[in-house]
Length: 170
Image 1: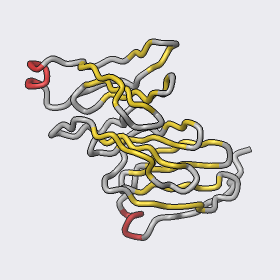
Image 2 (image 1 turned 90 degrees about the vertical axis):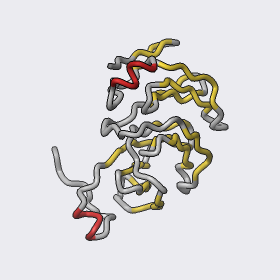
Image 3 (image 1 turned 135 degrees about the vertical axis):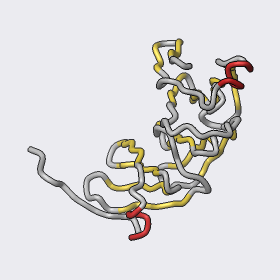
């Protein structure tokens, strides 16, 4: 029926003027939000009340994936981060290679068989252990001449089908 359930603003006036871009995910009654102002927070989806709010060292630019009581996201420094849904504390982080020129496309993540898989800004596909944050495997998708000729790496979202991942790049 499109009736407004709740409406809350958790931004200061100066933050609101910057028109932050939000990334959203939910689990049960929890709405997880990250933004391009380095904020991450949890909102009760039924009441709209703020459960917790934290600040990261860098802005976020990825989808949010949830596994058990943790969520995963990537920031503009190309760092994959694992956070606790309960309190927003960081469990671990994995720093991937970073490109000189930033891509504005949201990074894509998929979860498969205890690993989180993502493409970093230089075109490497990475699989990281969900529990420890250790790198399991990494494979390049671009050769050196393409990287030198290209100002930015462009890729599609990652799609997971059984044991295969699919994506497209330049």
